[in-house]
Length: 631
Image 1 (tube, rainbow, N blue to C red):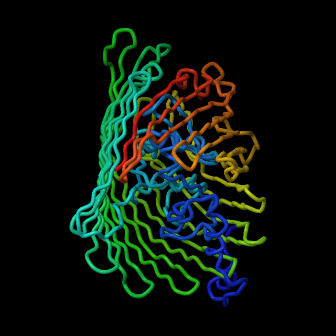
Image 2 (cartoon, rainbow, N blue to C red; image 1 turned 180 degrees about the vertical axis):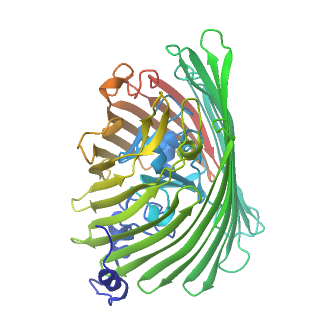
Image 3 (tube, rainbow, N blue to C red; image 1 turned 120 degrees about the vertical axis):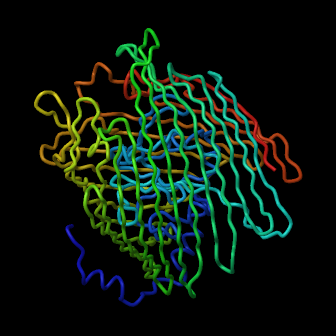
């Protein structure tokens, strides 16, 4: 599909609504799907940048809630994404260690990470520091699988949107205070200590989270020590308006591994600061305006030492700073929910990997999307225009359709869209030893097609199936230069296609089952050769026991199989086994709005191996336990 038919699009926008039933899809969805979803999961923000019901979302989206995050004893964002079907994580150790995500076979640089509307990806490598993001202040995570460029711009592989917790919404005049404190301790002197507090004072809502994580390293050379704080303030200056300020800061140090075969060891320190100021206010009936400003500063210093003597022989530093803002108008009338907006960002990078020690990246974009409802059908056209100072401009159209039919128990979805990812500044400006920058790199581009269904047709069973096909061109690949140097070039095309299947049962005797599977068939479009270093198969199984009083037990198994080239057989890791984790929690005291809970996390209970490279082994069997008090 190269372009949209103007006639078809005009019919979508202006054809009179058709009545297919007395209840709207959203009303029937609430009745049916609330058995399998929480209210938080049925309200999706990320796909069109304004809240809407799950039945109106055409994209393949997974939502992970704060309750689910707590149940699996997660420390960082990496722990959460590792259990999401369709997301493949390349792990390298325990809490705080480096990990890279892939969505439906994409590269790490193709996955966009958002927090409070801030893009957390670096400009240098387009990676994000997933392992440094603590989970305590997360309300939910919305994951779009596939490009979301018509809403967010550079995101060829997918988008992970972290939505943070809110202050309490009660409007009590007297001061209020709610909170939680927890502590856990485990092997290798591993600890996670957290506290959160929220309330209202004179109409001002506040939320504060503080935490510390540390470990001596569950694998050799992978120690970690970090401190974090997050705060959110909300105020209603006039009726219907919301003023909000957010701030987060993470800092610490980690080991980056021991590599005796290569004669060195490495560690690093990091700091990340991010903040937003926003105002959301009504304009007229059905119309709202939102203006937000944001800033992000993050830096890493990495050090290298001789393995035998401990003498430092090299170091690298990177410091990035970006500032930007967004404005959008949302207009809801009749069958339409129209969003019009713009983004602008300016970034500066300082790095010892660059000859002139720095580079800049400036971007601006305009976007528009609509959610149009016709009885059982929802049509979601969208378009975005991006301009960058390094790679020119790009137009990202997209359209989706959902239909809720078959006795109100099934949602059918289909999307088609054009997406892109910009080249990283490391590729266009970096000059490390033996590497030559290529300032002429073009954006990587994709046409994406997805169809799927979500059904509760069988009593007590929820099933979700999705098919995807991504046609990628202008791939950025490594090229060898005469004389032994290296550079990056746009070379070739790839086809990434596959299937995702998930199933979950309603509780029977307080017990429910879960299973997920994904297959990614990634091939060179010209030769049909299967691409290497792609997670071809991933699987998840689980069983959950949760009684009505106080006990919850989750047993989860995760499997991943990587397609590795023969040339890397000497360093190929092991990934033939399921890794099984057990999580248990028990409320031991409750009264007066206060609870005390004990929990135990027993990870890799069968001591299985699951690592991409043999020099980055996964932790063996290890356990941690702790206490959690809420008030």
